[in-house]
Length: 113
Length: 116
Image 1 (cartoon, rainbow over the protein chains, first blue to last red):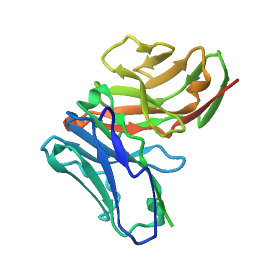
Image 2: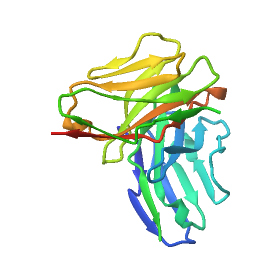
Image 3: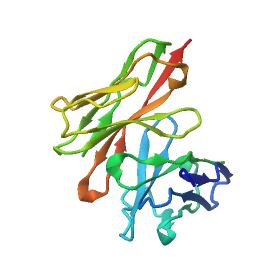
Image 4: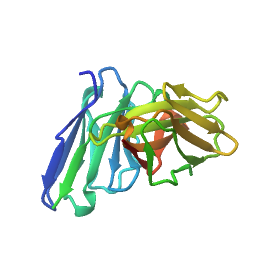
């Protein structure tokens, strides 16, 4: 597609359930990033994928969070045993190279009730 | 550690007027990249303008320009001839280039409202 696609757009889940958020980057973009945006906060880095290199997971807030990128394209962010503090907008971005700026998706708004 | 500070949580400007959004950052690196992103209510983050630290010339993109003061570690965004469509959250970002990962560090944003 022409842009970064994220699904679902909105997700409401019960506390304790697992959720999967999907990101389909722009074709040919080797770099893929996940950020979290909480109400009134800036964007918090979660994880970064670059080609076939090992991902940079330094921003994942706990071991309940994991992500994978299959075939160098689609990425899935998984949150296990969701907590209310996980409620946020999860943004995915891709880039051919970070020095030129990211292209962001429209995000997934996650609400944990 | 690098930090990005946007000290104006909210601002407003009359349509057709000029407004400046401030951003300061802290880094010990000499070469880096700075960005301004716009986030309208649709949530889509849109790249507004980009500055390379080794370039002294301030970047411009149509009605958007920056005042980059490297020594002061300041990177403000000027919006000229403000339009209603400029109403959005604006985020300043610093690209951390350690190990070539280009992780961006974002400020907390400035909510700009353009008044008719």
